[in-house]
Length: 247
Image (cartoon, rainbow, N blue to C red; front, side):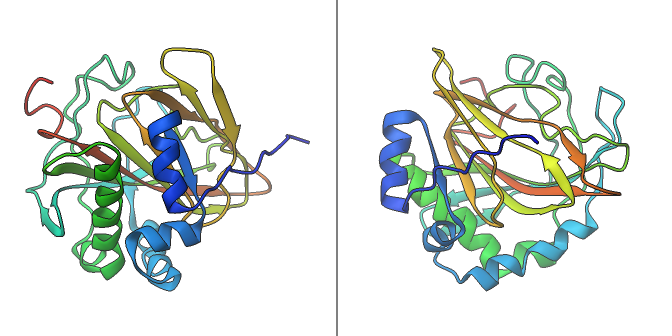
């Protein structure tokens, strides 16, 4: 039996403090709902859109275990503006496996973006992160991921432990179905301190100060037959989207 450690969830006010002090924090689903100011049912209404993700054709390990959609936004206070569809780009410094590539993923569907909880999530986390480190606006990339076990093994982070090259990251668990594994690991970027736990509750969230910590998720395997793990990853960057200017 593989040990599973519960996530160290804290209320939103404590999450802000932990982000300042430790560089990461975890919210339970009710904490996520409180941050975005919407009912848990509104969050769960987003979940069916993960059934319509498209294959990731850029995996350099030869895998076929990842599906995703991608979209970009600018959050400025209460204002949320969707940016024209663009490639996802990271430098090799932050992603040794897929860095330096302009990866054009299928866009997040318009009906998903139009759902009330979608905008509430992006604005809510933007406001929380601004209380940790002020920024006039956030350049946000939203990634819908499904990692499946159809080939026997799925890798949520094939690039290994990494930073994303942004200011803050929110990793929200949307669903786990028929799998084992998928443990989250967070490490201090400049030392040995770290923590491991498994996000299991839909719409629980790991919040990261990407300038201070690195993170990864361990591979998933099926319990029986076919399983998958769905996540929503939101990255927040001050100044510009990655690839639009040195910083």
